Amino acid sequence: MGCDSWKAELDTYLDGELPEEEMRVFDAHVRGCPSCSADALTRVQVKRAIRVAGKRFTPTADLRKRIQKSIAAPPQRSFGLRWTLAAATAVALVVGWLAASYLVSRSGRDQTYSEIADLHVATMASSSPVDVVSTDRHTVKPWFQGKIPFAFNLPELQNTEFSLLGGRMAYLDQTPGAHLIYDIRKHHISVLVFQERSMKLSASWGENVLSPKNSPFNMETWSQGGLRYFVIGDANATDIDNLAKLFKAAS
Image (cartoon, rainbow, N blue to C red; front, side, top):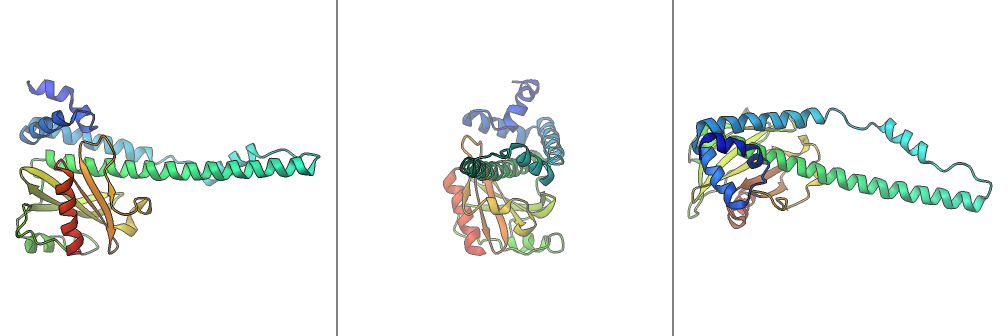
């Protein structure tokens, strides 16, 4: 299949809508084809720009007040009926608020997961996936000093199947963070670390969150020591979990 045929399915690949086996084949092609990797990176950047633009227009508190006022029950002559209607309205508002909060929280998690997946795909598609190339954690960790507003530890990989390839800067919610690349049996895994208090919707993630269903990648995320960690890649869930455990122990 020529590159034109690959590019025809590139958006489907980036959206994670291909079958699992096709995702693996496509991933290998994108990593080895400069033309497709550049096209993938461009499309990822466009998708992220569209999402950022979409965040600029959100409902205001004033709009919510106007909606509540418009659905408020009109005055009634009967005190009992008036109380019943008021109670029903209050219950409806509480239920609506809880439902809206849940949907906002879920959509926030889904959006953050999508952005993390985009960072992973864009890095894998890049001709220069890391800015500091080294298998030595004592070389990679100091490289981030002065570039990000926090410190973190990298795990010891001796007697494990994991190998460190290097690291680069990453940004999420306009927050600078560290992006580490690990390898296991020819599968690449991204580990992203951000300062949690600087991130939006960080509280909605909770602890040890796994990737959404029907995702082309396996992922774990957790909070530790004021930092939010994301481990994501096309390696199996056990490998993702084992690398996450190494980071938890190192921190």
